Amino acid sequence: MNYYISDLHILHKNVCKEGKNFDQRPFETMDEMMNFIQQQWNEYITDNDDVYILGDFCWKENEQSIAFVSSLKGKKHLIIGNHDRLKNEAYRSLFVEITPYKEVHEIIDGLKYSFILQHYPIMFWNHQHHLNNDLPINIHLYGHVHNSLEETIYQSFIQTLNQTYHYHCIAINVGCMMPYIHYQPKTARELLNDHQV
Image: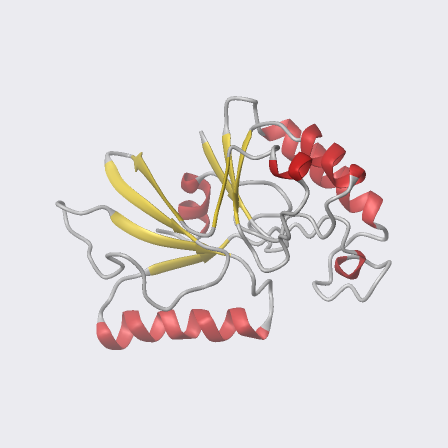
């Protein structure tokens, strides 16, 4: 099974109350957040699952982050984000692949889907305006903008494409802090259900 999540920012204290808490995450400390994510992840993910992490996974690449990532179940694929330094070889070796962009194909209820994975929200992507029986439904999954004004602006742009230009395109923010993600990797089916696709 494939799962998707983004922007965990492990060991970045400004995403919890130890720092600036710019996401308004409900965690007093980084240790509390990491313990919660580890529990949520490992209760849900098996070692046979593929987890696509759409960037900004760990703020630091040290023994603590290596131990944390090693403790998480599943085959981890990292889509590179702006805070992924990837200089530590031991840390890099924890991932099945490391790439800036990926297209993942799934069949859900007899329909073909392509999930366009990139850390950054993009305005136009491969076949985004095609919805017919010959081509897969192409959905952009992204992170980077968290639950910010930029997310609101981006989704407004997508709505304009759909309503004014009849694109019928779908883009879903898989940032861990989004209420439908809640710090736990989600399947494509869950994402589609949450967004009534």
